Amino acid sequence: MLIPVFYNAQFTDKNGNLTPEMQMFMDQLNQTMQDNLSNNGLVIPSITSANLALIEPEMPDGTAWLETTNNVLVIKINGALRKVTTSAYP
Image (cartoon, rainbow, N blue to C red; front, side, top):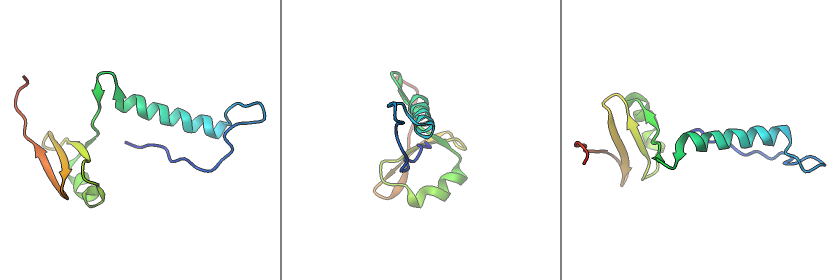
């Protein structure tokens, strides 16, 4: 999930309206939240196994990805990647 990084800029103009920079920041932030959060659940980001291997050392425990190469849900627990075993629901 690419969340825009806040930077130090003027937030509002003299009339109290958002500056163009802050409007763009808020638009990006809101779009990211709409794409990944909903009343229907959390959308887990997807990634290929090759890209997962590249970022795994930097992932904190509790990070979850839908690994698309093998179609497996992967969560980092106690410093190691663990796949969630799946079976038909319910």
